[in-house]
Length: 110
Image (cartoon, rainbow, N blue to C red; front, side, top):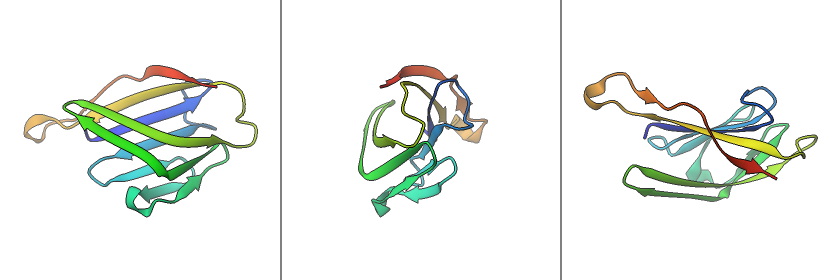
């Protein structure tokens, strides 16, 4: 797996959202509006909608399955229930074009 995206918002739109990108090869997380953090830094970062605390990130790989657990706190007006979507990018065999999955709604953040 090359990348995993998690988007939390009312609608599938990265604007005014809590939008994270996990890049396993870099062992890093990106948060829209906040930049990049190496997981080894074990710190927090935030944007106007949410705060990500990397001290509690849990990553488990089991074959093609990735279990990514994040501690995210709401901020400001981002208090109502939000929908959670996820998508991923897989590396192509032989260095071809990566395969990107469609966005899937995976839950609700209450």
